[in-house]
Each structure stands twice: as structure tokens, then as C-alpha cells.
Amino acid sequence: MDDDRSAPREQASARAGAVGRAGIASRAALRGTVRAGRATARRVAAAASAQGAGESGLARVLGLHAVSAAGDALVLLSLATTVFFSVPVGEARSRVALYLAVTMLPFSVMAPVIGPLLDRFRHGRRYALALTFVTRAFLAWVMADAVSGGKEGFALYPAAFGHLVASKAYGVARAAATPRVLPPGLSLVTANSRVLLGGIAAVTVLTPVGAGLMRLTGPEWSLRLAFLVFAFGTVLALALPARVDSTVGEVPAALTTERGSTLDEPSSSGRRRRRWGIGPRVVLGLRATAALRWFTGFLTFYLAFALRTDPISTRIPPLGVIGLVVAAAGLGSTLATSLGAVLRRLTPEVVVTAVLLLGAVGAGFAALAYGLVPVVVTGLCAGLAASLGKLSLDALIQREVPDEVRTSAFARSETVLQLAWVLGGAVGIALPLPAPWGLALAAVVLAAVFVVTAQVAWSGRRAAVG
Image (cartoon, rainbow, N blue to C red; front, side, top):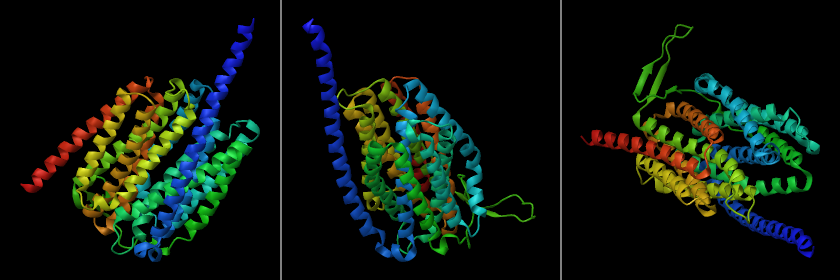
């Protein structure tokens, strides 16, 4: 009888101990995140206005992206606890699958349209950016009402779909705006490094605030905080320099391996428009970077489900492990932005090929030695590889594409990258494999793209030498 009574007490004590250890680990991670966020924020503040960025308007774009990234992080944090972790795994999988499918459908249809639309969108980029913030602010408030009081109203899902589409549209519009505020003498790689670093700093600073609000008051208040963040972003978008709207002298880009000027077929007005093929080197960089963006989307959703069905730690709950992976990916992105100066001394094709191998090795390591440390290392490799790949693509565009074509080239390439992330997430949800096998599949995909990229890059270099 005493044994029967003591067993529940021992189980309860063990559970309490596990919760206590998880709490200690979470608080330690939170303190480390806050310290890293403060250090990054100080660095971003020092670099924001350096080298003419304050006068050109690049500092304003940096602030705008920081606000956008912080708001998106608050929404993602709230949705993770409502759409994902509050329901059984099977139900969560179907919900998130529907979330991505409905999001991917309109974005897939819009992908061939967004680039040409921006090419013809004159004197309105600031308003297009502001519209993405207004849309996200409104939908954040709708989601807050839908989840208030612990309920999950029907409006949550359409609002979540719309928010992700608006976030993707923001990424494309921001990519088109950045070249217009580039200071003289500053490379696009350095400029985009600063912008990305500003987003990382904002996320690391504001995410703990959102997590604290959720713990104290529920997810609806972190969504309401996101509403205020997006409302502030609307003001910042409208306050961007007028040169962001200017399209004087711009030429549309064509994502083809043919490099140089071509003519479109006649339009309804009877005029033919000149276009510029971005060339084989930029296409090579875009293909490799899209594969890395696919990998980050895959990793995000695949690990989220794999860690729930097959936990890798008895001390840290799945949400804590996912937080560690996300933090590692953020650290990798921060390291990549710090290496922007190094990229100027290396050939971008070599860098983008090497980071494909890095991503494949990271995924392969986690597949062979599946555990907490290998999975966190994979997150670090994914963040580092994806960010270095994007910076290499920026360098290729700056080197291979004329000034008047860069805005269109950035807009169209960003559209492809956004779609690749969504496709990766869809594969991560649909893949019915144990975690090591899924990571092995990702490693094989990246290795295959690496082989093709290395072969094309080598052939191009031999042709150039010959």
C-alpha cells in the first residue's frame, strides 16, 4: 500500500524536477538572448548611419525592416502556442498544412506577377510598403480577438493566411526599395547585411517581451503588441525618402541565363519594352540560394513536428528545443552578416557553392547523430548558409547587373526566394518520415544542388579562362 502511495508522489516529484530544470534552462537562454540582443542593437545603432547611410535613407530602411521583423516574430510566437502547441500533433499538422497550402496557392499564382507589377509600379513603393504594414496590423488585431479568452475563432485562420501573404509581399517590396537608397561607395552586400542585422536585433530584443506578455496575459496581448508595431511601421514606410518611389531609368530584369538587353513582345499600347537578362552567374546564385531558402523552410516545419512526435531531450520540452534551434539559426545569420566584409575578397560563386555544402553537411550530421546538439548545430548551419548565400547573390547582382536593372532584379529574385521557403515548409509538413530520415533527405537534396552548382561554376570558370 505504501508503495502504491509513494509511486504517484515520486512521479509528481520527477515531473516537477523536469519542469524546474526546463525553467532554469529557459531563463538562462532568455538572459543570453537578451545580452546578445543588446550587443547586436548597439552594433546596429553604430552602423545604421555610417558611410552616408543616414543621409541616403538606408538607415530608415533598416529601421523599417527591424520593425517588420519584430512584428512578424510576435505573430509567429502567438500562432505557435495557439495553432500548433495547443492541439494534438495530427490536428496541428493538418492545420498548419492548410495554413501553408492556402498561403502558397495565392503566392504561387502571384509570383510571376509581382516582379512585372513592381516594374510598372511608378511613384508608389512607399505606399505599397505601407499597405503591407496596414494589412498586417489589421490582421494581427483580428487574430487577437480570435484567440482571446482561450478560444480559437474561425477568423484566426484566414487572418493568419493573409498575414503570411502580406509578409511575403513586404519582403519583395523592400528588396525593390533598398537599391534606391544605397549610399555612394557602399556595396549592396554591406547594405543588406546591415538591414538583416537590424531585423535580427529587433527580433532578439522584442521576442522575450512577447513571450513575457503571453505568459502573463495570453497570446492575444502579444498580437495586440504586434498591431502597435505594425502601425508604427506604417508611419516609417510613409516617411521613407521620395527617391524610393523613383523609377527613372529603371529597366525590367528577366530571370534568364542570357545576359544583355532584349525586347519584349509589343504591349497593348503597341510599344516594346527593353528587358535585361541577368545572365548565367546570377541564375546560378539564385538557384543555390533558393535551395538554401527551401532548406530553412523545410527545417522550420519538419523539426517542429518531429520534435513533438520524437523528443530528443528529457530535460527540455519540445518548445524549448525549437527555441534553441531558432536561436542557433539567428546566431548563424548574425555571423553571416558579420562576414559581409570577407565576401568582398572571395568569389561569390565559390561562397554560394561552399555554403550549399555546409548546409548538406549540417543536415547529414543531424541525420547520422540525431540528438539535441546535432540538431542545434544544424540550425546554426542553416542560418549561416542561407544568409551567406543571400549576401553572395547580392554581390553577384551588383557585379553582373547594370545599375538601372538592379531594382527589378532584386524584386524578382526575392519573389523566387520567398516561394522557395514556402515550398520547403510544405515538404516539411507532408513528409511522413522519422526525424533522422527526413534530415537525411534534406542533406541529399542540398548535396545534389551542390554538385550541379559546382559543376556549372567550374564550367563557367574554365570557359572564362579559355
